[in-house]
Image (cartoon, rainbow, N blue to C red; front, side, top):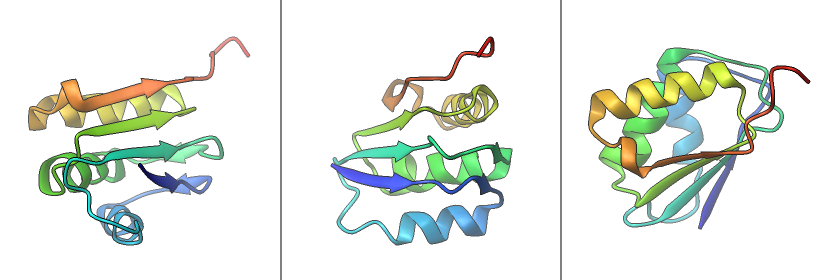
Length: 99
């Protein structure tokens, strides 16, 4: 399992490329966990590139996203749907909007 911890703000395809490039190991058939506990703000382009690099190009088995804000989850799900990899995106521990 490979783990990527996101900072509080993420935006743009270049940052997604940089963060995925820092993962230690091959993505092929791996489970990649994205820890989003600190995340406050994310752009749709960052989410789309994250999905593309990990699931499409990297051919990871699963992209598991934990504790992500609802808006980021929406961006990830939209990107995964467009790329035909929705079944390999797993989201858990999404914070409640009611607090």
